[in-house]
Image 1 (spheres, rainbow, N blue to C red):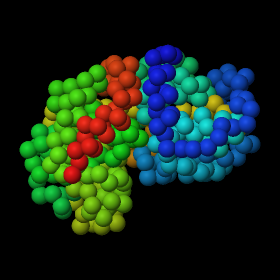
Image 2 (cartoon, rainbow, N blue to C red):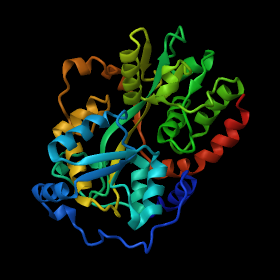
Image 3 (cartoon, one colour):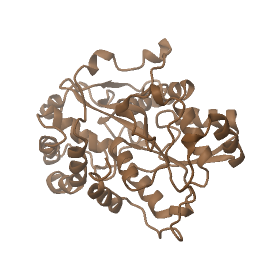
Image 4 (spheres, helix red, strand yellow):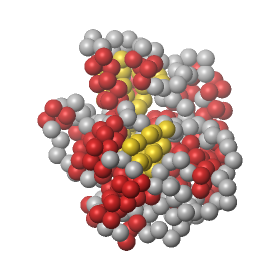
Length: 367
């Protein structure tokens, strides 16, 4: 695991949209800290002394983090602040600030978690739920642990689009304008390209079919070039999006709550799709290591996992869902042909090349 991500790491960190000077003498205040040797009770007591936890890339509206932060405040008295960043930006911030760290814990895409470990940016903590976490969802020592995962889905505003697409082929054959976001910075957008590649006969080591798919849309003026966010979706500026299932369901529910006349359809593409997880990483330079560890502990607890499920994510541990929540989810049968990335090294190399390929082969043709 340790060497195969090194080239990708340098490229992604260079591409992250952050500036600044590296912190002071680059010492690691937690160099000799062994969280795995401590009991949950010991960690909890020290976390409460620290009194706060600051996160990166864990905003209230994403995967229902809001309820988790509220619970942590009420249960342990920890105050919380989040700065919403992409996965690449989180790693760049940890690296840039070093021992001047302002963030304690982050949430990053699966590939970026391994990169963070490779760069020495992670603090190990397995949690008391270690044995219940599948091997594919954790590294050996607790440098990263996947808490939840999602699948690329098609989200359609049916007030704007009469016939919602149910497949990538539908998109090609229709006149839909499609939004995926910034492929250079967003894990979600990168997996949208991979999902299209799978649908068109490619995979993580052959992304060309996905690029060809989006190039056709770009040439026809059907690739939305704006930022993908809830505000634009709510304003009716986006007709069709390729998005994580849990994000799409969450956006749909938020918009309908504000506007009961809104209508959205979400589905897993008929050709199949791609699934990936999001991992917590504890900043190795954190000034509040115990609060960060306690946060991860709570995220993987039954209560924390249910919070994520109520954000419509699929949790790494099995939790029983209330019937009303289950009714909002995409039916299980639509997930029968979903792929996981089997060759992480190939996908890492593809992600390294993807921003340049996207600009040269897709955005250069955008109308």
